[in-house]
Each structure stands twice: as structure tokens, then as C-alpha cells.
Image 1 (cartoon, rainbow, N blue to C red):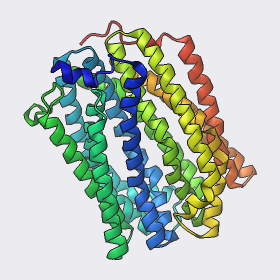
Image 2 (spheres, rainbow, N blue to C red):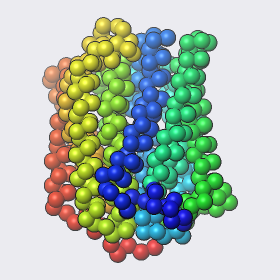
Image 3 (tube, helix red, strand yellow):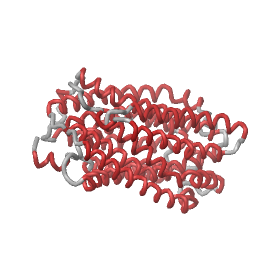
Length: 453
């Protein structure tokens, strides 16, 4: 390993707040462009086609995350393993973990593509997708999942780079692919007049470009995390480590997405205008997630690297700083969305009914973003410590079982859509309380001690 190069990406050395911010800021910008990437479909579809097309794209969101979230969770687990050995300066194990993770990504991407294409109509019908938007939803969804391999590999490659402290190069590649996606969206839909399938195709092409750029970077690297095509294979021990750390996160993502599918099915009962309005808000909410996601990811890598290096005091200080930054910025974003929600929702669709639904949801949940941020940061800390089963259990119980039970029961007695919206801040509060108790009462910080391999 090149010492100068390694020290620039290692999070085990240097001023804590500078290291976290230098790592988190490119993640923030990357997530920003990722959100623009995802929002472009809805903005362009909603303005250049119609509200039915916007509802079709919106109805696919929870279903996409249901399938994609599982494999993304596994990639998070792989990143924890790689970061741990990278922080411990164990080059041989880093190489084995990187190539095992890549092999997993290839298999997972192909499997996800087949599942997505085959089961699309059945799941959308089960969700109660309005019949007048169902054909367009199926088209969008099936084309999107034709690019599953590229999407999974991109996340795997980004996970490898970020686990070693490199958040800048993924940012560059994401900016490029986001620009490609937006340009293709405009060309296919605004210029050529194609339908929602073209929006999905633009996304697939941009995902392919971002995955290829990441792969080229990893193949040309001179560090131990370099990818060599002939070395891509499963290593039994590393695969177990990846699965052990990643499976709980993957299951958690899928279960939360499944719960959101049920929530979406309840929203669907209020009609296509509710679907379009809530779908527009979900795109705006993605911007509220930016500080939440970037600090959660930064904390996972920071905690993992420093626990690998057995720097426990540094772990504690980094955790405090990351949590404080995340909740402060997230709440500020929430206040801005609360104030300007009518204008923001109208950017997607000018129908007054669509705007009303979107604004109602925004003004119910945005002031509670600090709770969402707090829960995600602690979940990221526990994942970095190899305790990924803890956030899985807490989020499964609070954000799935309790949330779905609450909605299923209460909405039958009070058939008002606000009941659905209030489920979010209520369950965020509960998870925050449980995470706080575990953070102060358990010995999560010594979770890596004694592990061999």
C-alpha cells in the first residue's frame, strides 16, 4: 500500500471532524445528484406527459426498493468488512473481500433482473395499483429492472471505494451519469414524445455508464482493493463475513420496503391524485434524506475502520460529531420543505388536488426529520461495529410491524389519509428511543475483538 495515498483515505488518522466532513461532503453531493437522477423521471414525466404517467412512475418506487434494497444491504455489509480490514492494514484480506463482493454482485444483479421482470404485474396488482395507470407502471418497472445488473454492480463498486475512504471518485461518476439521465429523459420524452418506458430506459443507460466508470477506476487502481477480472471468485470465509454483516441490512431494507408497499397500497385506495401527490412529495423527501444518508454512510465507514484499528476513543468522538451534524442539517432541510412545499409539489404537477395531497404529507412529517436522522445515524454506527442485526430488528419492529399495524387498524376507523402520514413521525420516535437505550447500555464498541479469519 502506498503510504501517502493510504493516509489520504484512511479515516483512522487526522482530525476527526475534518475526516468525517471530507468524507461526508462528496457523499452529500453524490446523494444530491442521485436524487436529481431519480427526480428527473418524475419531473419530466409529470410535465411532458400527464398525471397518469406520474402516478405510474410513483407507484413503482416502493416496489423497486423492495427488490433493490436487499442487495444494497448486502453491499453495505461488504463495505463494513472491507473497511475493517483496510483500517487494520490487512492487504490480503482486503483483496479477498473485494473479489468475493464483486462475484456476489454479478450473481445478485442477474437474479434481481429475472425476479423484477417476471413478477412485476403480480406485485403491482397485489399493491392495488389503480387500473388506469397499471399498464404504464408495468412498462416502467420491467424496463427499469432490465438494468438491474448495472445498478447492483454500481452499488457494489461504490461500496468498495467508499469503504476505503474514497468518496470523491464515486461523486464524479454519479454526476456524469445523472447528467446523462436527465439529457436522455428530455430527449426521449420532451423531444421524441415517448412514454414512461423511455424514462426507465434513460435510467438504465445512465446506470450502465456509472457502473463502467467505477469498474475502470477499480481495475486501474494500484491499491490492494484493485479488481482483477481473473480473480473474481467466491472466498468461503469472506462470503460468510459479507453475508453475516450484510444480510441483516438487506433483510431490513426489504422488510421496510415491503411495509412501504403496504403503505402505498393504502394510499392507492385514495385514488390516482393521492398517488401522484404523495409520489411527488417522496421525490422532495429524498432531498431531506441527503444529510441523513451521507452522515449515516460516513459513520458506518468511520466506525468500521477505526474499530479495525482499535481506536475506541476516536470512535466515540466521531459518532457524537456525525450525529450532531446530521440531525441539525436534516431539521433545517425539513423546515425549508415545510415552508415551500406548495411550490415544490407544483413543480411536478399543477393539478390542485395533486398539490393538496403532497402538501398535506409534507406538512405532517417534515418537522420530524431530526428523529429520522438520529435513527439512521445510530443504525449506521451499529452497522459499522458489525452489529447490523440490531438496526434490522429495531426497524423491522418499529418501521414495519408497528407502522403497518397502526395504519391497517386506524385507517379503517378514521378513513383520512393524514392517518397514514402520521405513522412516520410516530414510529421514528419509537426507534430513536430504543436505539438510544442500546447505544448507552450495550458494549457494541468492542464487537470486533477476537474475530479471526
